Image 1: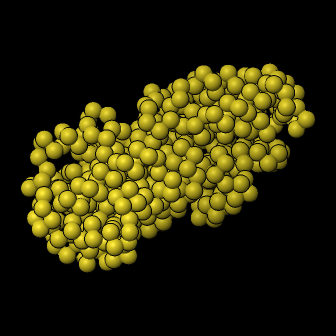
Image 2 (image 1 turned 90 degrees about the vertical axis):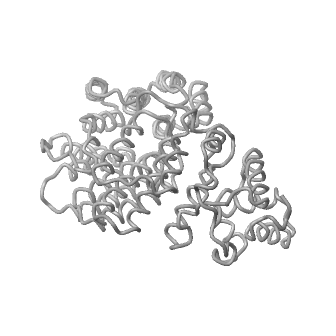
Length: 459
């Protein structure tokens, strides 16, 4: 295509790049740096390089990357792209979609999804771009691509019943699929929910409840992946949305989940206790499931701190509560019935009370097929052995449990329990071969971001 035939915005992109002395590969790294990818892989840079050439040739419009370009160049969006983007109908046909679904390139949306209309939405689009979404990661169905295209075309709208079903679907996915897949899908729906809220055609309070639920589930997925900083930010987003909704149950549920995620290396235990106290002030003095749940999280944190007498006192509040208010209308399936015995297994393992820990573990294993609950209570058994002086036996047991897990089930939450076992080993015994083997395995294990699991859940 001759330079004179290209759209003005395509010519401007090339001119601005060359003005700064950047080649296409340099431009690729600059764009990725803008969205927070400091050390991109060579394959990601190459993918971005190919996209840059297409954009500069005018073959397609930058879409979600348009505001990223504007920020990288330091030029207002409306100045960098003074002419409207091409219409979807002129550019997206079945052949193009088939190619997109199989090519190893970043997903592009022809129209900018109102990018630049407000700072919140621009940031959301940049977060999606930062995921580095490639069609090769989506399998043969290309479902996330379809969802993005449906949003761009405004061909789908969801009523509140559909949004509630969407939230339940994500909770199910969190328990049945690898966390990176869940995170990608959640980002797509979070952007859709924000756009619907921005349009102002629906009940803003109910949409905020949806956004709160989706955000806390996203924080869960990120915690599983070990991306703790991002998980904390999404927990805060969930809190803000829940608070704006005015739904007390939702506000407490979000805070209960946030405190529980903090137990897995996300925060120090004193920080977790502060979160619990803040939530209790909101809950008030009336007994409720959420107050009991917070007591269970307090028991776990105190056990980690070695304050076992206080931990058992907090545990009694959780285990002894018989209320039937464990369901919220937005996430009715969140409570599984395994939380209380799981907390017992955690606390009694730290104490070394084998009989009580064994009884709690059997209850958990009989009530759930959730791999995180199952793996962690088995690790609690190894922890109890170590606490009672069986360093070699407990370390070998933990190594066997972790080594037997499929790569898709090696979540950060499970690995952190393995690290708690290492910390329980007396310092002078940490050089023993069994302890060294466990240490090496934990350093090797990383959550697999693209495979699918068959049983899952949060523990």
